[in-house]
Length: 325
Image (cartoon, rainbow, N blue to C red):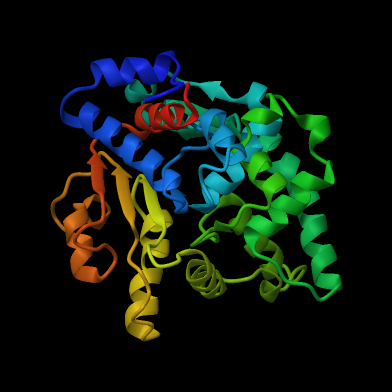
């Protein structure tokens, strides 16, 4: 352990058992995975962007400690929303005590609650809408088609949003990713605010659905990317939360191996999931890593970690360790 700062030193000294020890083990194995010349995917579920994970994730991107990201449509857009409307967000620390009437009052104020934080609809969603619509429409007129994240990259790199920046842009993971043109997979993008807005334009006849590349095309892109980057040893898989952000991309390996009959496809070569989902009653997102062996996703010797805790606490600490903080 060389060149480690106070955060890393603290967790090494104090995190000795249970989920704390699993955090340290996972961080060390992630670091070794990269040191061995292998690549890593990070998957983002939940409300990680609204939880401002970008403060540490952006640096992980800049320092080349992740090579591809899979995220929900919500995480794709909410990082940008926080970038342009942060001062309008409202924190509700007493969210557990809210009555239905109090929740309705937040809606009437245009505040959409995500746990303890309310996203301001007018300043966040609508501030982006006119700009992204123009980019969508321009592509359609030219007969061009792009993935959801590519449209977001175009908007960020065009500079049209700089007038609205309300946080240090270095803390936006989407801006960091756009500058690197980092590959992103966004399964189920339609299940997001911008996805809903795009669908509304399709319903009104103002856009064609075909202008947006689909989830099947995302899987095809990921299959090509995995094949080109996995080498003989595979890619690492660092999963934050459960759901489609992780379930979709992890299936690329059994698809290539079984359905495409490419039996030389390597398994994922590292696996860590941060989740507080209990493993019961068919809770796939909370399935223990060994179960994934039976689906042809992980091998017998794949380093496997599961950290049953709050990702907003765990992920920044692991990222801090990787960055030497």
